[in-house]
Length: 465
Image (tube, rainbow, N blue to C red):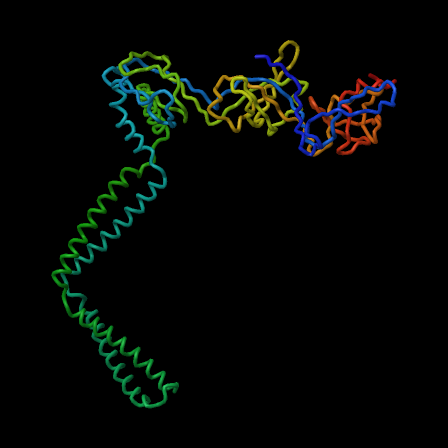
């Protein structure tokens, strides 16, 4: 599509103008022969001038996806309606299972076994290492439980250990008596006496050693209680069960699978899923349902369109800019949009992409520029035509002169300024130029000066008019 390119320049004049945008008539001295009695004037003020590059294009949503059936059948379920919002992965329509092709029914039957086979092959090294560690721990736990149970059939310790426990007890008893005797000699001393403090510590330590030795000696002489035997039996059974589980798990994963086997199993699963997926329409993106044309009971065939999903999360306008202006456009530049179908409302946006390859149209090279609308609303519909104005340059808070006040003086530009009841010709240098105003770069003009906006009425010789 070819677009007409034109330069658009917009000026926003601040209310610093002494008379906002208004013109009034100035009475010129009637004593000046040949001079009109009334001239149109306007005060010089400050404003913002923006030069823009414009083109037209059509609105496009972020994405449009057309969904179609891939097999024969009868529609069994329609889970959405027109304009519904759906998410990626949602099942939108399903075929009646009784209408499905035999190959698809077979795929449904084979899939569970194929997935299980793939799962068994696709065991990671982490699982293998963990299974080996679990088996090792289960074996240790079982051995400990077995030994503990065997000890319940005996006295708590052997004769040798009993003799050792008895000797330890007698020695601890003797040490305690000695500690008590020594402490009795010094216990009447002051509490801060060093010897008394050391004796007290020795007595406390001897008492603890005696208590432990007594308990150990008594335990060594006794046999396990029936309750202890019962608990040991239960612990052994639990350990046996856990060991069996650990061995089974290790058998599943101990051998590294052949990579080719994994690849083949995955291909089988993917193939079966592809067959089964033909029985339903699944949303590939988040979007809005449009052009839904299926009802429950409808007969369908491969390639038959079902609906469209439209992603309205972003809206774009693609325009064509000629080679003359393309280097003035940059990604990130501000854009304004107006729509004939909407009215006077102006929408804002930004340039998001500039094509690097152009297209030749009637001997002129054009480049596609993508602009994103930032404040779009429901009034904007895909396919609408909009005029886009891309900001090129901006001059803010500058003195601006009405273009109709500017005239040529040779190769230069000048304006008429009314001062002290007389008219002076003032040469000016201009900057940015819009449709109505120009930026004053230099010249003997200050804010508030009145310029003549119909200079053609002044019959000044050599003015270049």
